[in-house]
Image 1 (spheres, rainbow over the protein chains, first blue to last red):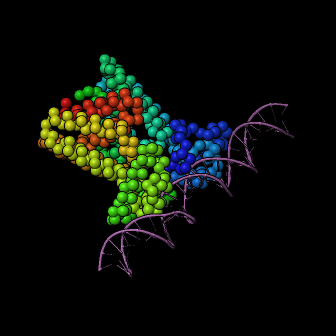
Image 2: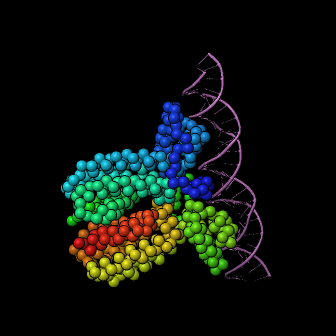
Image 3: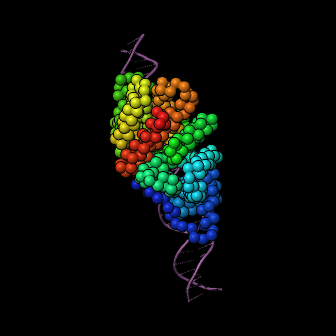
Length: 213
Length: 213
DNA sequence: TGCAAATGTGAGGACTCATCACATTTTAAT
DNA sequence: ATTAAAATGTGATGAGTCCTCACATTTGCA
């Protein structure tokens, strides 16, 4: 990744649309652009994705692409943002009504399985979160996402262990969540059998940490 | 990163020198190239590092650079390889004579501290392991490194718990190690105070997992 | 000394991201 | 319906990058 400009200019923290599409026509075009980008990322990865190809597949000109996305990273960011929004809603729902250790075990275990399957099945998601470390805006998005998800977990923990130090709970939840992402990334980069073992081991470690022994 | 060629061609798994320097003269020049690259990465990160600038700072021509390194990634890889070799030796030494739980606690805790300080102090190391996910060769190097380090840990665990399932020990050690790298990366990307908390929490979790309750 | 192998050079090829002056379509007010 | 302003669309072109290659120089050695 990284053309000349992005490398020289200070990497913008947030890559927002250069101009929000207000007409129906342009909203549809933006959708087509994102769909094209998604396809290309799935096929070749976001590094190999070429802006010209995105435009061509979306049936628009290069100029139109840059009218709604300030640069290449912004397209990837927009896709990532959708994934996080969707998954956050899912996680919040799963943890909403958990109020005892048994329920937490079930809900957490279920969530890990869902995530694992998602990582295995979604090449776009995989690519985006793999490249996460190289791009500042993406890194911040992932961090914010992780903090938000950890917060859901903290809410549950506070119910289960009202006497515990809140700061310690935050730290634990944040760490457990980030380690989950590590375990997923790791699991999909080795063969399936070892991947399954790693995910299972993570689940055990995390639960031991969350519900105590 | 990623110029046209590297993106199109199948990413080579191993980025080996195009031609090994046999004369004293060229060996010194290669050292200067690596030193220049190291400086530039520390200053601006490996993405922003420009091949022309590396050549200029090393006092050689672009052509000479490409005589010993097949492409840009190979330079970063060479630096990464040095770091891993050095740290593996350090880790092996620290764990070599550990044969009881108390000693493991001490040695592991010490190792984590050393790594944490290293991450805080070495911008090059930080940059390289951050970009790790985007580059196949680097990802594989890190994976191999992690497996090797986990192996040292497994050797210790087998001494402490001779009856345990070897495969389970492998999985645990590998996961614990990878999570350590996650914790480090995370710790240096937040403020110092939270970073310290995260590292401490990781240490506690890891030890609980390694030496049992 | 002579000659092959190793080493050194940098202008230029190939390709990329992103811009901008200009054309077209939509919206909305008269 | 007319018309002006706003939104949208276009693609040749600029700027910048990685890397190659034909050719020059230096070194090791018989």
